[in-house]
Length: 185
Image (cartoon, rainbow, N blue to C red):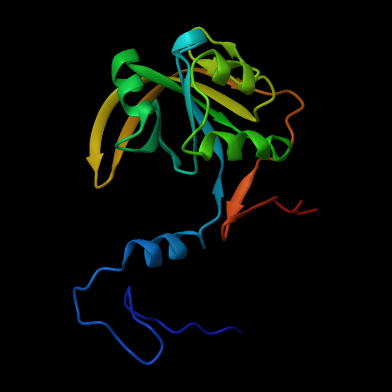
């Protein structure tokens, strides 16, 4: 049986921080890296208007109505694009799409037609790029927008749902690296 030592956020071996002290940005990022997350590319628009970014923060919020939450950096191009478009698409990547994840996680990621071509997708009914081989793509209409520290949280109503018939394994990010799910059988 393994044991864990409980520590307050920010406590270091042998030294506890004063009560109420928040963890630093680097410490919190490292701690959250312990939580495995699925990897998705959020897209807005198509053609010259295409914007896309990699995210690891997609949450299923409600089944009725179908709602998802995505978290985006507040200074990124996508926030303004979603505000203008009134919606977005979420494309859950497969293990074979880790190159797309890396590309759209970079600060100098492509946009416009370059992004659309790199994604290799097609515009869905909502007008947002959908990746052909994604495990799952969801076309969403913005229901609400919330401030969240240095991020903006978008609550989207899922209007269209697309699943790949022969989907590969979902891409997972854990401890700063890509990994895969183990088959339980």
